[in-house]
Image (tube, rainbow, N blue to C red):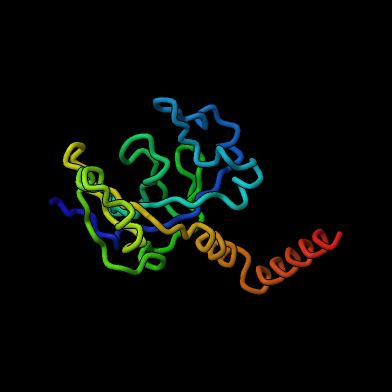
Length: 184
């Protein structure tokens, strides 16, 4: 089985929209009825401030580090980012953390066709937080995450963005607000 994925090349990133992206007709990125707009489920303000989490593969292109979006690309290597720089669509990679900071176990490869034919998914869920799927039919590999660390990644991003003190103040005020609502 082909094992070409090196998990140390993968990162989680928070991408945010610029006003130019939100106004652009290129925001509508459909392929076979699937919407590849990473911010489609967010309000415009949420897209510009909080962004969304995506899986990235780091590659060197012409001597520079680029991060290839694994979740929101319509085809291989479509969306590329450089840290803190708007890409051609107006999406900014605002924050990155290595994949291995959230998923610490060693990678395990499974043949996608074996998973389906032998009904292995429930066993894999019990044993792993992620795995790497290889498909002979499609001649491809992909990281499949089983535990969701999106909230932890967003929290790390907000701490990075605001600083620990301001983030703590914001969380305290939020909790007080929720408590007031609950008491009402």
